[in-house]
Image (cartoon, rainbow, N blue to C red):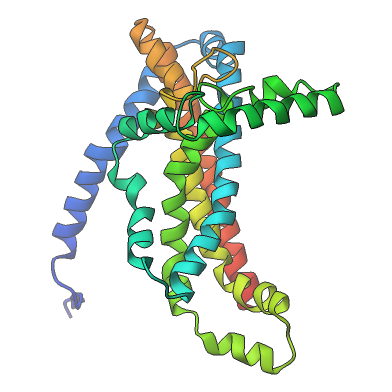
Length: 297
C-alpha cells in the first residue's frame, strides 16, 4: 500500500522554513562565516600576535570587565525598577515606564554626547560628583596603597573608565526591566499572602517565594545587558577617553585596525569577541536551564 503522507495542521511549513533559513543565512550566517574565512588565511603565529598583544588584551579586560560590572548593577537596580512599575501605582508611573525605553529609541551617539554633557567636570552632574569621586579614589589609595586604585577606577567620571561604566549601565537597564516585567505581572499576589499566612516574614517571602520565580528571567536580562555592553560602541566612544591600555574598548580597537587597513587583525579580534560572546551566552543559557529545573523540583 502506498505510504500516506502526514499533513501538518499548520500549512506552509516548507515554504516558511525555506524563507527563515535564507533570511538567517543572509543576515547572520554569511557575514559571520566571512569573518572566520578571512581569519583562516592567517598563520597561527600571526593570529596569536593579532589577538594577544598587550593593547588588545587590555581592551578585552576593559570591555568584558566593565560590561560584567554594569550588567550586575543593572540586574540589581533593574529588579527594583521592574518591581516598582508592576506592584505600585503612583502619579507619573506611565512616564517613568516610558523613560525605561529611552535607551532603545535614543541613537547611541546622541546618548554618548548627552552623557558627556552631564558627567564631564563642567557638566550639570559632573561638577558636583567628579570632585567627590576623585576624593573617594584618593582615599582608597591612602587606605590601601598596594592597589593602584587610580588605574582601576579612574580619577574622573567622564573620559575615563567610570564613563564606560555609566554608558553601559545606561544602555543595558531596559533589557533587565523589560525581561522581568511580564514575569512579575503574572506572579499572583496570592502567593505572597499565602506565605505571610504560613508565618513567613517579608525577607523570607522575597527569597523563598518571589525570587526563585524571577531568577530565570533575571539571568536572561543580565545576559542581554552583558552581551549588549560587550558590543557597544557609539555611546561609549564619546565618554571613554579612549586611552590605549586603559580605557580603550575592543570595538573601538577593531575600528582603529580597519582605519589602519589592518583588515586581518580587525577580523581576528572580531572572531575572538564572537567566540567569547557565544560561549558566555551558552553558559548563561545552561544556567537558565538548570535554574528552571531546580526550582521546578
